[in-house]
Length: 327
Image (cartoon, rainbow, N blue to C red):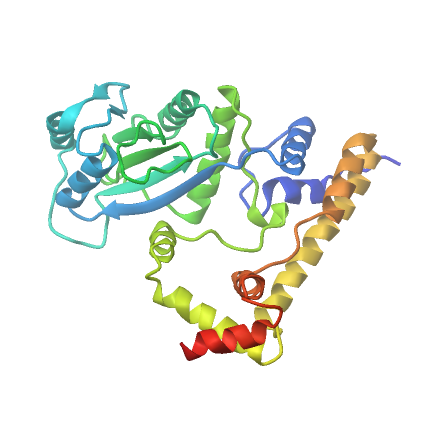
């Protein structure tokens, strides 16, 4: 008996996302296979936004490193130097009425892992922006690589900064609003453009990949990296106290995470049945193996406690932690 429905396969491919982009069965299989083979996952995130024209100007200076890096506008024109960047901002004709609730522009970062061809990455972002934004919103983009970024600590991951004017290009009232669904759609589109330019890329929901820890915002990441995060220090102190009380204590959210993982495994089990029903035993075998080898469940709290124990000075982590707390 052949099962026509692929409901579980749909959920593994789409997650909780909108299905406005309907895929064929073959495309769903390709998407799932990329996920299970660990294809590089695209990153698209909003890093901030300017509430005044001065804020937008400051961010344009930031991404161009005060004119040291070339930018590209929505028409594909190269914008070189600080003066040309300033002149371009003038053409946006931002109505600056002070810091209102609405943003004048959004700062978006599109990134890929180290080793990705930067030129192909830039072309992919241009293709993505042309399809999603051209004629609707003005924008400017700059490629950052470890080799070309004059910053003291350039990121090893090639990425493109994209500044998008919030007001519509032809209709000022047609404002851009970036919601969670917007970012999910953009991830899918960006990954597709990367693949069209010869870069293996994927856009899969985090929980489908067995990831339990949410990515940190840029601000939180930089604060923690600098060692000045009060929140992180507080979490570390709480973890030390937890170890002194006898080890990892069960938290309410731990059960929710376990339940979510149980549901994901269940989806894979059902998807395996669906794949075997349509005669794709090879992909079913891969899916079955993937589900069995999902990464262990680990929250940030788990990771902190594990790191504390691992870095203890001797075989008795409790004594080491007690000395650390006393300091």
